[in-house]
Image (cartoon, rainbow, N blue to C red; front, top):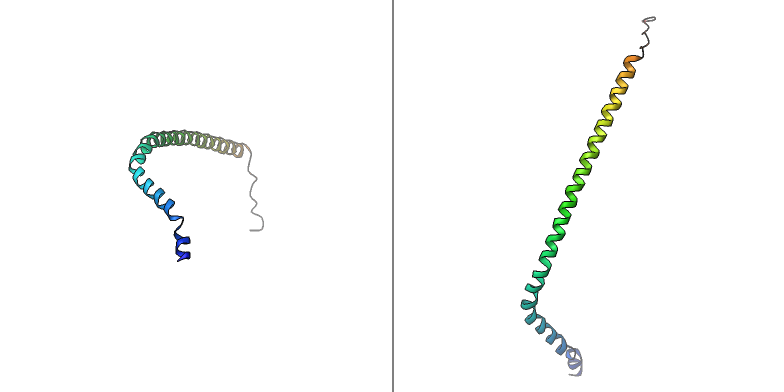
Length: 93
């Protein structure tokens, strides 16, 4: 029975710690929840504010890119209208 005594020798402390955690958990967890909940809400609010700001920046960048594309297309159209197109040859057809 020596091996059984050796196997169970450290269990006394482990069982006591387990019982202590089981007794303390209902007392400590609500208290931890009271502290963590406002912190979590603050983090979520900050994340949402950051997401809103990022959406505004992306929308502004997209609008500026669209304006730039329209400006380049207008310049290309004006340049092609100003330069004469070479006449097409009908020789050999």
